[in-house]
Each structure stands twice: as C-alpha cells, then as structure tokens.
Length: 615
Image (cartoon, rainbow, N blue to C red; front, side, top):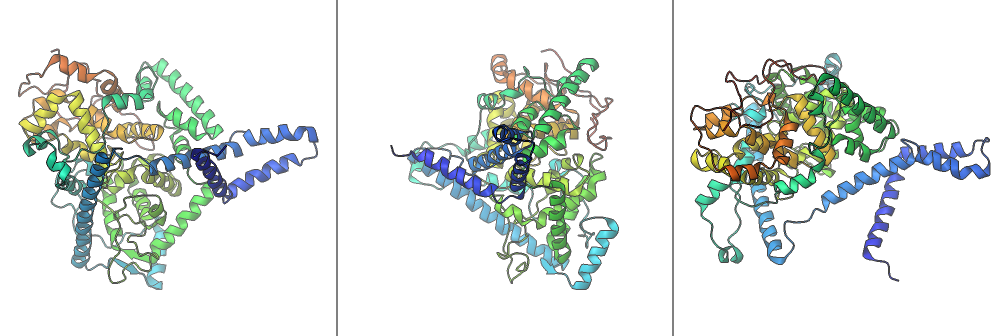
C-alpha cells in the first residue's frame, strides 16, 4: 500500500526534529549520561533494558527534553501555517485584497518612519549609524564597568519625557518617536479595499454607518463570545484560580496557595512544558513564576542555561560598545517612561539595558515576522550586518516599546535571565502588537475581536459611544491591547493576565480584558457626554481585579442580560458602576505585593466614590 501524504509529512518532521536535536550539546550530554549509567559494572545484561528506560524517562531527562522540543517546534509550525480568512475562491480573492491593502499601509508607514529617522538625524546632528573609534570604544567599556550597566548614557535628545505611561498618552505634542499607537491607529482607519468587480456587485454600505459601527474599515478575522468561551473554558469559575480564590478568607486562601505551590514545584521538577502550560491556566504563584514562565518559553537547548545566557549577552554588549546608533537615544529615552510610575521607576536601568540588548540581537530577524526595519542609504549600517538591516534586530523602536520589558523585571534580578524571558515573550507574542498585519492574533485582528465582543455583549453602550458622543471604544482599547495593559492595570494583575497568555498561547485574552473593562464601566460610560468624561471613567483601572472581571464578563452571559433589559436611561450626574459587577479594591486597600517592590501610589483612584446601585 502506498504511504499517505500525511505519513510522509510526519516522517519528514521526525527526521527534521532528529537533525535539529543532534546539533544540541545537551542532547549528546544526556545520551552520554545514559550510556555511562548502563556501562556501570553493577548492572547485568538482563538489567540493561530497565536501566535504559529509567534513565531515559526520569524527570528532566532525555525523554522530557525531546517532548518539550517537539512541542515547541510544533507550535511554531502551526503559527507559520495558520489558515486564511476564507477557503472558497471569493473569500481567497478578498483575502488577497485585504493583504494588498495592509501591505500598502505598511509601505506608507515605512516611508513615514524613514523620513522621521532622517529628520531626527539631521536636527540632532547625530549619525544614524557610526562605528566608534578604538579610543571611544575603550572609554565606552570603562563607563559600562563603572556604572555596571549595558549601555552608558549617550547624548540625550533635547525633548523632555512625557507625563503619562504610553498606554495612557493622548496625543502628547512633545512625544518624540519614530511611530506610536496613534500612527498605527490612523493607518488602520485609512485601510481601504480596492474597487474590484466583486465589491461593485455587492450591496453598498453607507460610510456613515460604517464609521458609526466600527473604527476598523475592513473586517479582519475576529472571535465571538461563544468562540472565546470554548477557547478559555479552563478560565471558568468552576476552577480555582490565582487572582480570585487567593483573595478569599485567610485560612482557605493560605491552603489554596500552599497547594498550588506544592503542585508547581512538582511540575518544575518534572521539567514538562505541557504540564507547566496547564498549570498556568489557573495562574502562577509569584515565587514560582520565573521557573514556570521559563519552562513554557524555552526554545533553545543548552547544557548550562545560566552560563549560555551570560555568554550570549556579553557578545551583544560588545556590539553595543562597538557601534553608536541613533536609535539608542530613542531606546534610552523610552526607558524613562518607567520614571512616571511608582511601580517601575526602580527598574529604569535594567529596562534600558534589556532594550539595548534587544536592539542588537539579530536573532529576532529569523524569529519575528512583519518586522519594521530599514536598509539605510549611503552604506549606513553596512558594518552591522551582511544584509545591512537597521537596526541589527530588524525592528525600529517605537513609542512605548519598553512597556513589554517592564513586568519582566519583577521576575529576574539577573539581566541575562530577564533579557531571555523578554526575548521569548516578544518573539512569540508582543511582536504582533505593534505592526499592521492581516493575520490572526495580530493587532488588527485583536481590535476587530474587541469590537465584536462589545457589539455582542453591549450594543447599546457601543452605539452610544460611537454614534451619540463620537468616541469609538477602540480609541482607548487599541493602546491597552498594544501595550499589554502595562501602565493600565497594577503589576500583579498584569502578571496574572500574562500568565494566561502563556498558558493558553493566545493573545485574544487582551481583547477580552478590554471588553470586560468597558462592560464593568458601563454606567459611567452611559452617563458620559464628552471624550473627557470617557477618559475619566478609565482613570482608576489600576485597582481593578482583572481575572474575576474577565470571568464575570465571559461566563455570565452579559449579552443575554443586556438584550432582555433593553437600553438604560442614564442620568448625567450618575457615575456609578453597573450592579453585579466584580468589586474593585478601594484606594485604602493595600495592593498585593509582587516582586521586589510594592505599588506605592501610581494611578490612584480618583476622588469620586464608585459604588453599586439597584436598577
């Protein structure tokens, strides 16, 4: 019988995984350990099979290493071969039109970024890329050693830092960057499909209706409440969760935390990536989060992980000292956003160092798609890489890029360990949040999913904000999603939310969280009359408990309740929350300690008291 195409593909995959494993030193070291164990004189020939099986399947052994590696490679392969939006010819043609529209927007964005980079270079008289002289390089290394930092402070740009965190900025005139969330939002709103025959033949939709009902002019792939209930079924209230059940009575909470820690330690000992992912679906205790995250995120096989990371970062530091890049100033300036938040300001130096390593790491060019890098003219950057990509990582820094590094500083005190965790998080997830792409689980798709959830769960609020006062909900949710809620929620809530991103391997939970926040603030939004009123409704989100909020929104069928109740009649002075919603922590409640420092006062609750009322 002829072998099927599926079996041939499977055999090819096995051969490819075997070849990749055989290039790893740790693979051969583990095989050598098994061989040495078998050759010990205390074993007879009859014991060889049992000894080999025991050594192969022991916790953290060769069997687990192979399982983790294959699981990771399969996940990467599935991501690369995600299906398109449609399958028939008409859908395929439309998909092609959508792809062309997004590519056109990306070309315009690239031209804008290149122009801004050149203008910045001309105005500051700083070269885009420059090789340091030997004397300058030695001086730079000495300053590194004295300050114990990856990059010494270079010539600062002459514009002051912004007042707010990037996730809260609203058109700051002093904002200096190559591009930001406002640029992406504007390019998204300008997306337009070509006037093909199929589009002409189809019923026309009024532009007024389109703008009143969606801020995204093209319908990208999105998900409904039913889809997300199925995907995030393990997030349901029938499971005990870190972030929910650990806030109950002290005795039961302590018992719950102790049980979770014991289970987590067992999983860490087993070194099972799959078990770690399942464990994280109910949240990770803060003391085990570094180990669990690293176990989920591991992608490379090394015999001595710590030494390997230190060696890799040392090579990147050498490149930093060798070349002076204009984007270094933007990275250093962006790191100063941490000064604006009491939670992150103590990590400013580490955040800057992580981002400088990021800018020099060419590893991202083969692990991140839809990158926004450039090839400078006049040979600039030719010495940085054979293909002259600028900057070396192929990703031009954008406003708020440091937000992705801030929470990682709570996991590791070592720069190399923190950088590798950040590197994996960025390559797997966050690189999708600051680019225009038609693919699923990217910024545009997540924006459409947010709008779909809003329309389904609370069409009255959505229509009121869009049509009555002219403030599309995506105006706020766009930057929340783009920055992963950093600067919006308290740090312990961000880490709990990111636990679920890693556990479910889905970014749609960001859209879900954004829709849940709007639903939670329903009464205040319906009493709003201006953009400033809407902004006030979201001024105190640092006190929100995000996991119970998501649970309530996702599993309590708000769409059914809203449809049955009909649109409410808000009063202008009413700024109270919707009844039955999860209760926030009040400002006099001590926030949960998570990491080296506590939240000391950032984003304090406004003077208005938020209470519930009966309808």
